[in-house]
Length: 274
Image (cartoon, rainbow, N blue to C red; front, side, top):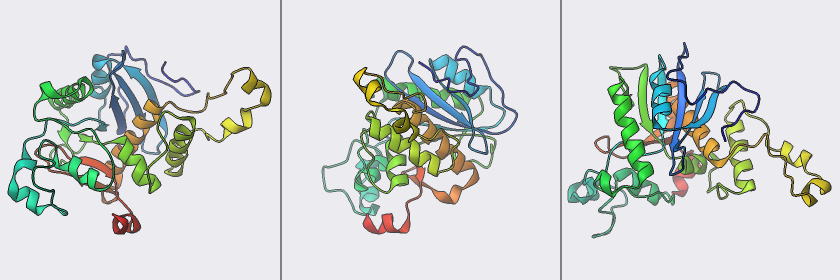
């Protein structure tokens, strides 16, 4: 169910919701019945919307923004065969071994080198899982609505970019997070987003509400704790905010021809470790 923790959420059946200032959207395609979870932040990192919806609702919501940076957790297109180019492979550091990492994108290889697992993107949309196909379709739809790939000087007000929440949290924490669907994983993710100054409830309050009686009754008071999909959407929205306001604080991994993945920039100690 969509969250309604005391803020103004946006109905998923709304054809277009126009915010007058720049909005920072994070969109997560999934394989569920409502195949998108999305979050919207303002320039002060306050939550404007957090909901689920179908393709039409999400496309209308993004299309209704006068100015927005939209980060989507999916590739904009299949891999373009760049990892089959011997010249491109030789230019990578480290270069992949012969016969390995040929049917993927450059960004995915670079993330794997960081020790971050990511689903590889085939060379045709038909071979991609449905959630990736939905993400590609959303990129195409937003392009038809006037959005440009980030970074764009031609259209500075409406831009799209790709991100990957697991890698976002890994970089923000400096290590791999707990599994996303666990209680500790959700608390950890919400804590680090609060550390990034997102205006979110303190997830540590969960422990204040846990009592012996509630545990025996099978009751866990988790109203102030977001779901894993919501946290992924919030992390993507945060990347969109960084891309707009602090471009030097993000890395763009990969080749623009097949899609770059935007992530928070690693610290110097993280770079040394990798």
